[in-house]
Length: 271
Image (cartoon, rainbow, N blue to C red):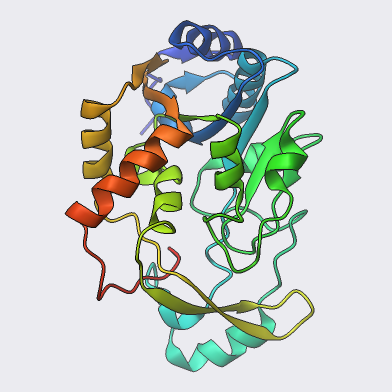
C-alpha cells in the first residue's frame, strides 16, 4: 500500500524559533531540553531544523543542553528491554566498548539529543551512563566535572544548571523524561545500588550509586504544574512545558518523600 501523505502541521526552523520565543524562551538563557521529534508534526529538515530553531531562539549568548544517556553501557544482568541470555553475560562484560564522549551514541532519548551531541562545538559530560551534551558559551561550565559515581546528583550538570537559573523545556516530552526531578532524589534518603560498566582503562568496574527511578514522575509533574507557575503551549503539534530547573527540584524534594517512599526500593539505570 502507498504511504499516506503526512497530516502535518508543517514545521520549519522558523516555526520552532518563533513559537518558542512566543512562549517566553529568552535570548541568552540556558535551556535543558527533553524532546520528541515525532510529536512536532512534519518537520522540514527533521532534527537538524529543530536544533537550528532552538539555537535561533536562544541566540548566540544562549546555551542548549540535552541528555545524551548511554544506559546500555551497564551490567547485562539487569537488562530487561530486552534481556539477554545469562550465558552471554561474561562475554558481553569482557567485550563492551568503554564510554567515549566523542563517539558513544546516546540511547533512548531521541534523535534531537543525538543531533546536538554531534553538533559543531558541542561538549559532552564524562559520566558513562547519564551524560549531557551542550552547545553555547556555557557548555564547558555545565559539562565539566561530571563525576563517574554521580549520575544525576550534586556533581552532575543538573546541579550546575540549577545554580545557573536554567530552565527545562519539555518539547513534546512528558514529565517522566524530566531529569531535574532526579536531582531531588539525591537530596532525600534513598537506597544505594551497585552497577557494573566497562572501565575507561579497560576491564570491568562496579560502582555504588544512589538508586534513581522515574516511577510516578508523571504524577509528580501533574502536581507540580498545578501548584507552581509552568508555561504551557505548543510548538507545531507538540505540547510544551517551560519552567525553572530550581523550581522542579525544590518541589520534587518535598513531594517524593510523601508520595513515593523508597526505604526498600532498588532500581538500576534504564536499559
